[in-house]
Length: 166
Image 1 (cartoon, helix red, strand yellow):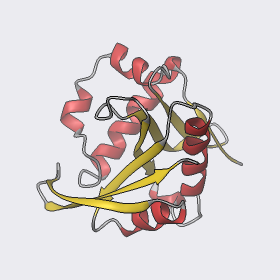
Image 2: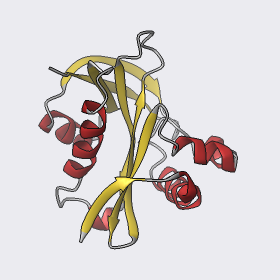
Image 3: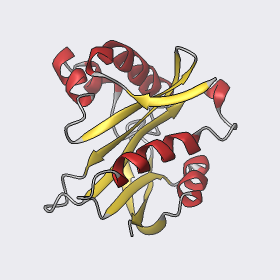
């Protein structure tokens, strides 16, 4: 049975191991790098799971984590009314089953339960068509594109989307 839930600070090691494996497996998908995040302290990993300005969700088959995703308060919005989505990764063996919908549903429910948020932003590497389809399926509209040097050394646009909450 597949389930999703927010990870707890006490699960920092599980989160760390999965996140670092994702960064190693797909260095051209994320803005973070394995080297930078491997240097995080235990306290930093636990703080990411504390749920103060966001949440990290684990996607599970039984008790085995098969994916992660996160939502955070966008620090570029001085009003704190914008949420951002990041860090989504599903193990390759579980892709193509519609599980990304669970990632979006969990994050959007978390956001909607906090009235301070008025909009949500998310981006992806232009060549990441699976991300593009999932983002558009959940009602996001393309608002910008920015040329970016990705951690794998590739230069490609990041497509940025927005969803206004009503």
